[in-house]
Amino acid sequence: MTTAFVSDETIRETTLDIIVDELELDVEADEVDGAADLIEFYGADSLGLIQVLARVNKQLGIRVPREQAVDLRTVELLVQRVIDIRDGKGGDQ
Image (cartoon, rainbow, N blue to C red):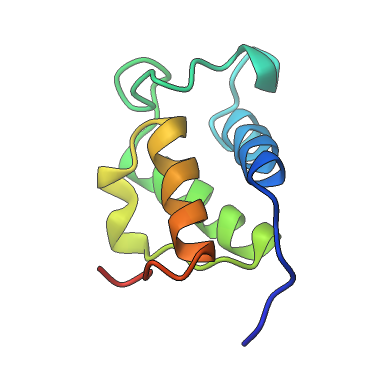
């Protein structure tokens, strides 16, 4: 399946919006600390991380394997993983 190219900026903005919505954060997307641990700092649980991934997959058309959720605990890690997959660096590693 071929998907349209999604820019780094779109990936970051979409991911931030999804995180704020799914984790029901009381902040604006641009106020989320990209380096903060989503579980320890923002109170996410493993199900919340999987829901974030599911929406990222659906909205961006880039499949991040669900089993990687526990390793992608910051916005920066998640955004970089989506970019890597978009760039053909594999989603099943």
